[in-house]
Image (cartoon, rainbow, N blue to C red):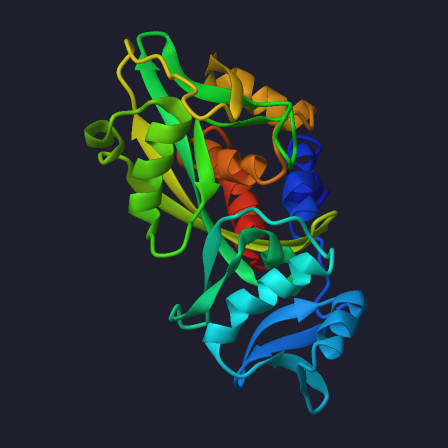
Length: 280
């Protein structure tokens, strides 16, 4: 009997999951520390830059205190390792405690874990479930022109997931705060992959928001070129057949398809295990 995990109906979805979990750790990288805690993985080139700054710890590199992280990120920017985003992100340890902050652009350079939110903007109509889809502006630094969620964004310093959803919903789609506050936390997805900007070790807090049929999103911050309301089956076909969506959006949508019963139960188990890193 053929292995169900290699079924042609699942392979197009599994490839997206595999693509977002393609980083091999350490994979030639060196551990990066804050005090005694490892918080990142750095490439040989970044290791050399850190050593040139005197940030050596026996056979590793790092800082002694969390307060040193932001100045370090600025120094790496000045050295040309990345372009500043002018946005501070919290750096957390494995227990979730905030150790300090860095410029957002330094996160993949240092291989730090970063957190963000993705919101499924759902509309229930008589003819079925629809999803609002955004097309990213061609001026975006990363993945210009790709399809995206109605609302998605990184979690800036000092914010939690719920606050980030409300903030991003207003900025990206003109969703009033009282409506955005009804968004329901549904999933948490982690992945690690190598990207042009460096090692991405992301944690996505996923939300569902049921929107009224009369709602029409407005791109208030210029990050979205256009919005489109699509039947969920059409969105599923785009994920299955194309690479039109931004890389990590595919994972959140596959999670949505599972939760909405769009896969057979046995297929849903395989996909869920793949999303969570469990054995098939």
